Each structure stands twice: as C-alpha cells, then as structure tokens.
Amino acid sequence: MKKTGLFLATALSASIAAGGAALSGWNEGGGEQDDATKIFMTFKDKTDEEKKKIRKDGVAVYEVCSACHLPEGWGTKDGTFPQLAGQSAAVIIKQLADIRAQNRDNPTMYPFALPKEIKNAAPEVGGGPYAIAAVAQYIENIPMNPAPGVGAGDDLEHGAKLYKDNCVRCHGENGEGHKEKFFPRIQGQHYKYLLRQFEWIRDGKRRNANPDMIKQINGFSNKDMKAVIDYVSRQKPPKADLAESKDWLNPDFD
Amino acid sequence: MNKPALLVSTTVLAAVFATVPNLPVDPVVMSSKASAETAKKKKRHPGKRLYLRKTCLACHGRGGARSIQNYPNVAGQPAKYLAQQVKDILSGKRVGSNDENGAMRTSPMTGALITPEGKVRISDDEIAKIASWLSQQPPAKVKPLETPLSEDQIKAAKKLYKKKCRACHGKGALKPLKNYPIIAGQNKAYIVAQVNDVKNKIRKNGKIRTMYSMVKKLTDDQIDLLASYLSQIDRSK
Image (cartoon, rainbow over all chains, first blue to last red; front, side, top):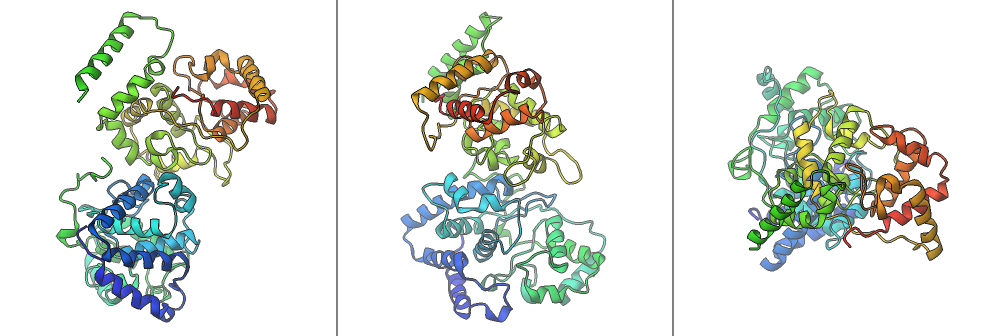
C-alpha cells in the first residue's frame, strides 16, 4: 500500500464528531457509512500481517466491482462506468453506503452492492461494513488511468475560468478533491461520466448531491458545463498515482 | 510441473478425436474434466481477460460458475452454443420475459455490451475467445434445494425428462446433441425461466422451435419438478 490512512483517519474522526450538520443534510453519515469509516480508521494501526489480510479481502470484494469498473478500476471511456482507481476511501465508503441505503439512485449497480451479493462472491469477507472498508482501502490504492476520456478540447479557456471561479474551494486546485470533507477527486475522471453527474446534480436528479454545489452551479448553461468538465477531465493526477502505461493490467486479477 | 504429461494427454485426446471423424458426441463434453485441468495450467487464456473486462462476471460469477439471480451458469458449456447465444442476444434474436426487477431478461447483457448510441462493445472474435475459455472451466457446484426432492419425485422427474427432454439434451442431461446446452446442474431459476419463455413463445432463437412442442403442455408444477431435478445433477461426478 503506497498511502497510509493516518491523515485521512484523523480528519474523518473530526468529521464524524461534527456529524456533518453544517452541510445541510447531504452527508449526515450514520448507518453503514459510520460503521465502515470506523473500521477503516483502525486499518492504519494493524500489523503488516493483518494489513495483508485486509488487502486480500479488498481484492476479493473488488472482484464484484471489477465486472463493470474493470479489474484496473478505470471504468470506461464512454462514461458508462466511472474510474474508481485512486478515489479517496472516504468518498468510496460514502457513495457505496449511499447506494446501498438508496440515498443515491443507481439501479444498475444497486443489486451488486447488496450485502447478499458481496457475501455470495466473497464468503470469507462477508457483505457488511468491513467489506466496504476493505474494498475502499483497496480502490484508493489502485494506480489510475493515465488516459481517461476527455471532451472536445475546444473551449478550455472558458472551462479553466469557470473552474477557478466555482470549483476550486471544494475540489481543489487541480480537481484532487478533499478527502476529509468527502469531496471527490475529479481530476482524470472520464469526461462523459463527469458530464452526466454534473447535469444530474444541477438538475436535481442526484439525490445525495451537496446542496452547496447545486447552488454554485445553478446558472451553468450546457455550454458552460461542457467547458468546465472538459477542463476537469484533462487535469492530471500526480505521477505517483498513475499507472505506468495505459496498457497496465491489474496483476491481482490477471 | 506436470506440463509435459498434461500436454501428452491433451495431444492423445486430440489424436483420438482426429481419428474418429464422425464422433457422435461433442468433444467438449467428453473432455470437460481434462480441459478443466488444462485451464488451471493455462492461466492466461485470452478469453479469461475478456471475460473479466466485458462485464460477464457481474452476473455469471467467477469462472462462469457462480451465477446470480436467475442467470445461467455458463462454465463448461459447449463453446459454439455460448457464442451463438451471445450473438443472438446482441442482435435481438433472443429475448426473454421480464425478470423479478421488471427488466427484460436479456437487457442487462445488451445494456452492458451495447452503448446508448447503439455501438456493440464486443467483437465476434472476442465472443469466441470468451466462449472457448468458458467451455473449459469446471462446471458450477450443485446448489442444494431448500426442500430436497423425495424419491418418488425424482422418479417422476426422470420419467418426464425421458419423455420431454432426453432426445436432445441427452442421457442424464449430460450428453446433449452437438452444440446444445448441457442442462444438468444448471441454476434452477434459470431453467424455470427458460422453459416458460419457450412455452410462451418468447424465446424463439436457434433450434428452440423443436423444444416448443415438447414443453407447450407442461404445467408449472411439472416445470418446477424438472428444474429441481436437473439442478441437482452433479456434473463433476
């Protein structure tokens, strides 16, 4: 594992203590999100032997996810499935818990995210909060796709300006996100996936969206949306987080 | 380590088949055990990579032998049959009734392999490779029924099988006609769904026409009995 969760874990406990109340309901936590987060926070203090076991369990659970998000966790360029690789564990835990609790509509993924199916595929891990924590830890450490799907590239200056004025505060200078606040990493994500989510958030279709974001992007036209998303999809994650080539195959599944 | 020996046995097998030109039984069926062992050694069959990367795993499970809901186990089926079914599903020749979630049975597969713009995400060559790999995988383990069949029920099921199914699907449901599916040990829910779809003239692709006349008068109880019986036949024996 190339990253330790120390920083994240401390930040997360603060966030749980605060109960996310300031964020007007989009992230109340509770239920599996808290359970999985608490388990995840204990990972950093485990022995090497235990860490190995957690990784192995993460691989076993990820096999279910890999069917659509692919063994590399890179999703598909056409945006049907997002890249998961390199996403922060906090975000993965929240989204997975939200989908399971039907706070985020995802009819395609829903049946596969259920405890029953995960337990069926990885009986040794079970399908509960530990499985969520282990898979989130695994996903965060998968090297990212160096060549994600991008937009037309014809309005990048406009996109850059929009990004600076509207997105930096939460998603960071280069779309790296903000783990402790559950703001996802969006740099290097497939253009078409980002576009769909942005549109759903703007138009009120994504139920677990952050209300601050809905307000922030309220006035975006479709042209603005395309420009800013194209810009984001072209932001490069740090080299250390990228796979060495676009032909990399995940050895855990090959 | 045992590679040379294995190689020899495969070669011998191939030679045997080569010298018997009109072999009545599908070689895939005959050699399923030997092939399963070969598959273990050959870790990098291109079909495996494709199986993992074309969303097949989601519903058919690890090695094609852990299907979920009422999807079929596809491990150890004749490669030609598998490939044809995928093509028929993608072209719309094979359709199905709605599943328990209200989705048309084949729609998860078309949804995964055809983009919203209508582009098919998998080539015939890729389908053939996946089918070839799957045909060599060890068949699914038997999932015990909630209530096991009584001896009388098994007797009745065998009688019904002989009358309605055996001509094509073969003795013990293990030795079908060439390129027909092996229905022994199949997921019970899948068998029930398919027999009903054939009976209701929803599934009409391929040679299914011949099956319609056999199943059109089957009652729900009879279909359940047959499916229960078939699902409990252990192909690994």
